[in-house]
Length: 350
Image 1 (spheres, rainbow, N blue to C red):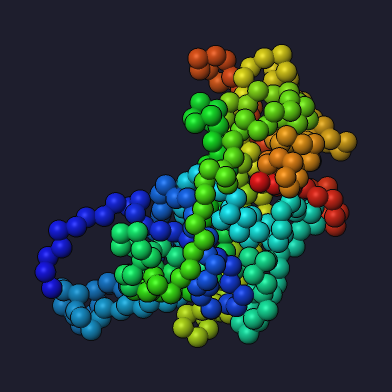
Image 2: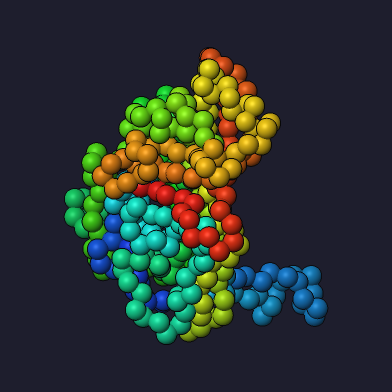
């Protein structure tokens, strides 16, 4: 085999995602290409044991080395420009609501059907995802290399939207974290996948679409001029049992489902009220005084706008922020309406 003189850019690799119907079964058709600036890759090497053992002298002996390619969690984080094609799968998965507009009730309970032997998960639910990282294309053709990396049985545990009005006019970016317990498949033939390309020009969105001042609210205070924002949803996962080929027997959500938002806003007559509202701890009250909304509609809706709404939220931090002009940094967190209440506490649309 001759020495290769070719070097590849990380940007040449293809990242795509698709919805599975069965635990342990890779999704290969109708995947969605993702817009990716960077990837934090998952664990590929499995479990390794390097400890020096009694009777082995002062050198780690070969018979004391252990390597296992299963029995561990891989975590993969990708980020880039947000697009609605692949983005819909992310929101489907983490909210466990299978269609836009995505809504979460105050009495949210996670699904319980991702278990060994169940094969009727709907693709529309996006309950489990396959994430693939494929090698560069050979010219303009479909990838032909067999060096693809496949992570199946993934759940999304974190999705973040962010934007800054001084950066590409408020072009919205995303970050998403995937977790899986199933061992990754290496040397996966890229020809086995069919992928829908994205058109970022038609799928992307901008902060400038938030054009209705009364629908830019932070804990009930509206007509806020937003300089930058970060909106984050977390819903962690637990993998239980160890089935055939390292596939977990049960995948379930664990801990808190949380939604938070951080803003930098212009200091003015409207936003100055944030300081007192934080000190007075008046946010989160019934009747909408704790409502946080970033949208061009009174409620984010398909086709009407993109954005997010937390009808009841509380401040976690408010502080003056010095820059070219005076600003305020404000952070808020979604709260529920009481145990057992079915009222929607989070609405998302893109």
